[in-house]
Length: 173
Image (tube, rainbow, N blue to C red; front, side, top):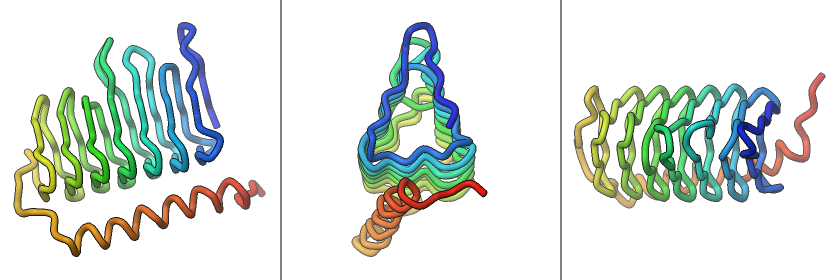
């Protein structure tokens, strides 16, 4: 893995997290317990700070950053689909950011929000908790149901387990 200090700021990664060797983590970044950081993910705490809560999955090719002097706070058990781009202020607990979705500058996403694949949450947009959004710009199309919560709880559990399995059994050939 490519872990870089920057201007005296060193990433802090919990020992139970899995960070793929091709991920790039720079500067003021804290990664919590049992987080999965996939191949090619870029988490840049160079001129802002990134805080990643426990049990969060940042899948392959994601980019996470924030504006100068600000903090991007990512809650617990958040799922970022492949290729998501996040430049926000806050992503609430249990949120799902679909593959290729964008959460723009200073946007705030509430708890248990589901952003569909390719959705674009625009600059400064505030997304209330327990909503399903799609489109560009992202618009609410429904409420998060108990079925959604059960499905995504299962998916989040898979990534926590995968985190442990990768730490123990991923071998480069």
